[in-house]
Picture 1 (cartoon, rainbow, N blue to C red):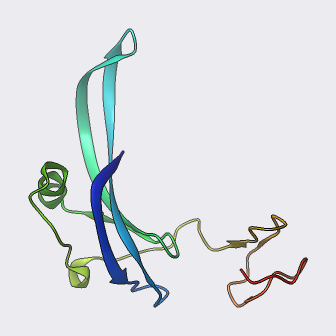
Picture 2 (cartoon, rainbow, N blue to C red):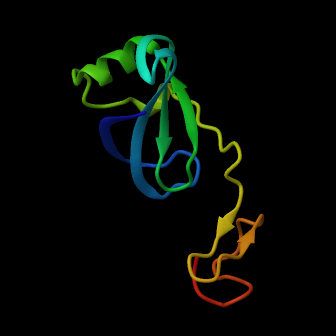
Length: 111
């Protein structure tokens, strides 16, 4: 679930200017498609530019969910780029695993 939190940052992984978003994951028990009990809540921060993600402290995530925290300190967060080591062309759909391409090898348009 995406929380109502956005912060403009310079990405610590790729160095681009982007947006930091916070997500909450949890398990729940439902009865006739109505969620009854939620447990195992975890909070993650994700960058919008390269989709790098990291886990954040549950207390800080709870404060963000309530709307009390307005900013995250990037010095204490350790981002990883798991599963997002590719580029996809928006025009032709070609996917490449090489991050050095500035232009699509198939159609020649910029990524």
